[in-house]
Amino acid sequence: MPERLSQVRAREAPEADGMPDPERLLRKSLRGFAPYKPGTTVDEVRRTYGIAHPIKLSQNENPLGTSPRALAALHDVDALSIYFEDDHRAIKTRLAARYGLAAENVILGHGSNELVQLVFTAFVDPGDEVVIPKPSFGLFKKDADIFGARAVEVPLADGVLDLPAMLRASGPRTKLVFVCDPNNPTGTRVERAAFERFAAALPPDALLVIDQAYREFMDPAGTEGVDILARRPSTLVLRTASKIWGLAAVRFGYGYTSPQIATWMNSVRLPFNVGRPAAVAVLAALDDDEFIARSIDNNERGKAYLSGEFARLGLHAYPSAANFIAVEVPIEADAAYRALLERGIIVRSGGGLGMPRRLRVSIGLPDENAAFIAALEALLPAWRSAPADIGAVG
Ligand code: PMP
Image: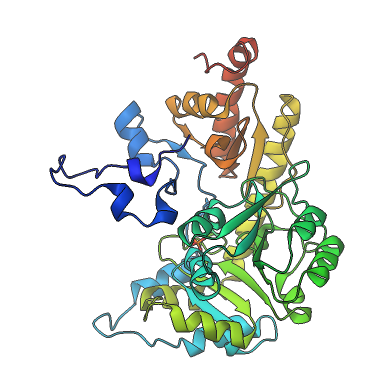
């Protein structure tokens, strides 16, 4: 069970006398709430295991680093003493033009995470229904809990979003419907025709939120969220600078939607939620076709290599449309994750992600992928001879 917020103690401060009862002070909707836990950091592994150069394949970052054009632009960033424009007209116009849209169709956030939160802030009252696939990106459920929404979680079918079941779960009380395509943590995508039928059949008042953080890694035959928006105005397509452009640390997410929905979301966000460094970096990265092509190429090769190795090792992996793969392991995911950690390989355990027998592995550089496979192969015999449901040996 994840630790509830009411049980979480202050980490730095010593035990303070006179702290209020969390059941009285915390909002009711937060009492059973489990905070988001990011993956293990490289520093933690260095400190805990004394491994100088851990390999991090846990947060679906760009293994090639950051777009060189963005880095160069960041180097020259100036005027940091001045609040940057709040409207971001130039960058919205550029992002919109890629899809033949207008600046009014674009909403910007401090990472696409913020845009998910803004959707709840603007549209969800306590008790409203929100349809969420399970497992999917954890923030959808987390924000539903924070806002006191009723999360209607719809299990995946064979690792893929079950759109007919999600449609059946959506009704007049549904405010939001989340589709993550490709889906985190499974990496799978839905068929375009099925997605289009689903979008057309949803109640028109429900806002369809299509999270396409990994869209650039998907094959062109996959769904382009913006095409759905063109036919269904109550749609929000979320994208991010964090993955393809390698800008996770600057925090920049963007969304395409109808002007009215963008206006409503904008009216509840914090002023200046996107800073000048983020805007400058994204404006430069947008045109960095060489870096984008290289990133996709590295991802395709790595995916082919890892998929081939998983097949050779007899491990089932969901077909991935993203920059990570969810692979099945013969023991509990948490134990498998820890065993790899001791060998300096950081992956994400599916344990906390709704996949108790799978690891989510980001596609890295060729030598990182090979080091992961070597560690996995070395551990497998012990895992296979371990009684089911106990921890890893070795
Ligand atoms: N959506 C999905 C599906 C993700 O996996 C992630 C990153 N883990 C995000 C959104 C968050 O992206 P950002 O860095 O833009 O907040």
